[in-house]
Length: 187
Image 1 (cartoon, rainbow, N blue to C red):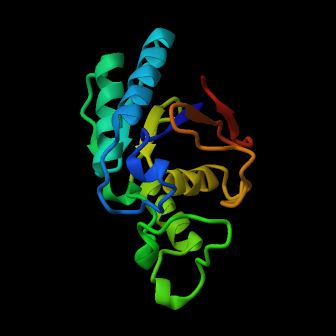
Image 2 (cartoon, rainbow, N blue to C red; image 1 turned 60 degrees about the vertical axis):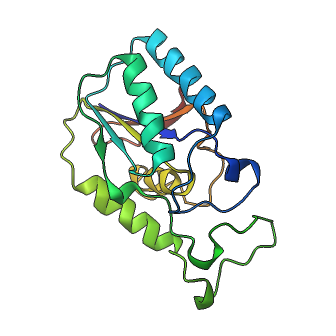
């Protein structure tokens, strides 16, 4: 059984300001670092080990992965894979999110949901994971939502919010060959 541990980076100032945060390299704030240290302490207490840690190369994700790796005494190298960059929000990057915000339209030049899911699928397919692998992916909300959709073989839609990606926690996906994947929040 392969288990994927999906970790969203710690809080940034743009998260607090409710700004769309895509591929611009916004660092974590002090609260984000606290979140990741607390998460790393909890992970260390569980004694979990990981075969592989893959991170988005953006500072907020990479620093999150480094904090976790250090506290759990992960001895492998962290792979920074640009395939796990956040969704490209195009012209909407930095815009304050509101329920009425219009994503549609070519003038926004943003990566569509299908494009971000395709990118997540292609990025995951680059790796050969043993059947009993324990893989941590440290990335961003929209990208991890796409990863969740891919790991579910499309059974959990991108828009489904019943299985959330939460800052400061871990969404696990157990994949057993021939069976439905199982999702649960770890901590």
